[in-house]
Length: 250
Image (cartoon, rainbow, N blue to C red):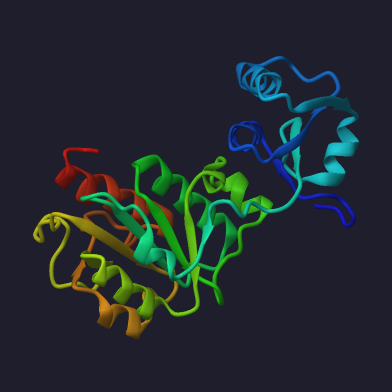
């Protein structure tokens, strides 16, 4: 994003979700853009939500975002309506089988966005990350999330171990995804009730203190020549192959 400009989100899917979330103040479309189904969805949503649209030279979009695919939305600020704190963990409406995802040390905005996309799509209720040494919510993260970060409740906390204890007080079972776990997701049944799934960084995994606060550790079985998946792929696999089936797929 160029200096002096309002924050922007770029790409058709992210722009569409920014409109649906009520975050977009204006949609900018490159002159001469082909009327693809994705662009028509953006323009229809903008019309429905009374968001101004304007055609501009492609060079103007280039100055705002690198990979915009011909459409950019300006927003007044990075989204705050989905941002929560540690105390909210105790009062949030989780439901009987609510699922939370904790990211411990994921610092790359692209990884944050990719993880958030899987979390929101799976129906998990909340993303929890650190306030320090963690990826911020940036336009790049929103783009990588396909707009999911504009919808997903996101608690940013100073102390993950303390946040985990709050979740336990709210009757959560905390499960750490760890390649060195004694059993895989096929050997350790997913507990019933509320579940918090913890994922560490790709380089070092979960921190020692966070791992010690988990009730259960599980791994993803690796049967090929590659020894591991990236963080977002691991999370998606655990959510859809381990957590959701124990809840009837919902």
